[in-house]
Image (cartoon, rainbow, N blue to C red):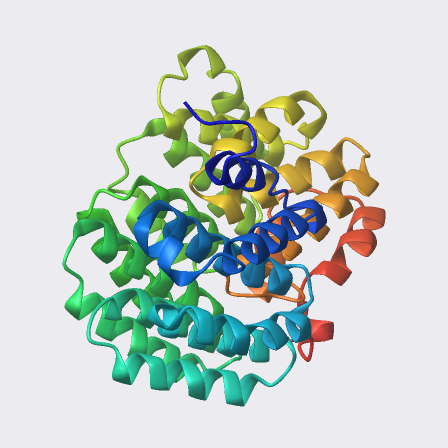
Length: 369
């Protein structure tokens, strides 16, 4: 049992206070806890290993959340003192320095530091490769990002690592508009039984206009509801709007048959493609909160809110999602152009287009970082 004012209880309360919309309280608590533990003599902490563990976790969370909160300069200012006090965390401090510099606009210096950390690492190299690949992608260094990620794929030791890396490569090749590579990496992810790779691949191929390749894949798709949704998108692309709507309506009418995750996603997509976002807001919110495909679920919920006339809610959702990329990486100031094209799969008003466009790198704003 923990005493209310024990370090363990203070740490637990600090962890529970983390809120992506307001990191201020968590930052203050981790700063206070770090300061109190550093005030103890090293001998005291050595006698109680749990205190050392709490100190290390609190110090790293303090610096990390300062950076997440846009306070990279302050985070960097704390690292020298923490490095001296906690030298066993040298690699973590170097990574935080690198990410802080990237977030402050010193991208080249930050990437160089991450490259050096990877070169010198004796263990945990794949996690570092994926971290570096994400930062390279955000910086527009696609060729190097691919090289680094392929290295991670070759040296992956678990199915989870292989699926994660393959999913990253799908996202990378989407931005490069290379359908053959997207499909090849999807097949790699599918071998690891990653269900999250399937529907997003279809929607990306559709959004980028690769209907022939999409049609080939659909010929092997076993889920009839999923197949009809995307067959409808193919029909629409070929000018058969009536045929497309008939396919989507057939899926919407089959809502009572929904049994699996793929069925639910297909039913939701069909309703959205018919412009019936007002009817499915609650489901779209639930899919966003629970989905392993965060980008797809986020775009679907954005469209549902827009179709329901809730443009301010849609904008707040995108603003929050962009803030979260500062945590989850790669960091985007505006979402990639492929995200915009994926959103445009759903019917939206001209007013919605104008309201939501600033959150994406559209053809008119390719210079947005």
